[in-house]
Length: 192
Ligand code: AMP
Image (cartoon, rainbow, N blue to C red; front, top):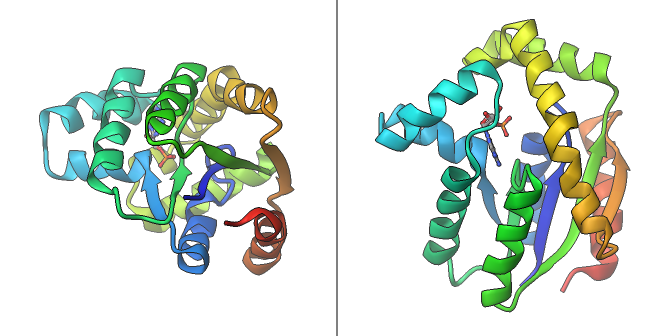
């Protein structure tokens, strides 16, 4: 198995790059943002609870997303590996993910962290809001709140994986293909 975390602030291009990565390396894409939006679309109790937080640009409680990931891992036992996108986002989520993967004897191989300047992020998210239909992409104060959440809680996740020497920083500005090449150059030598 090959397990990869694609890490970076909202608007750093995780979704776009994930699509290309799952095609190239045949990984199963697990995006907690997509899983949560699907729960909202189906108006499940979990979706209704999560929506409160998402509408404000806040993180959904750890137990909710950890439970969703645990279920998704159980449902996908015959895959080559996972691409985690938008998860883990807190130190507690990272520790829970490590435990879940330890039970499957397939740890995280690498965390790729996309780096993009804040002004560029806000511009990209506002632009995406014109077409994505995502209410959390249209309001500048919600966007700024999501970026603040990232700095307050999510950067701790990179510190967690730095201990194990698994973090690689990748410049997330330039064309989609340039960024994809940078990412591929990091994965290819260690891909198994
Ligand atoms: P995303 O699509 O990854 O930008 O996520 C959209 C929103 O979903 C975030 O602003 C959070 O409210 C929520 N969310 C997604 N993933 C997580 C996570 N791992 N932990 C907590 N909240 C999450």
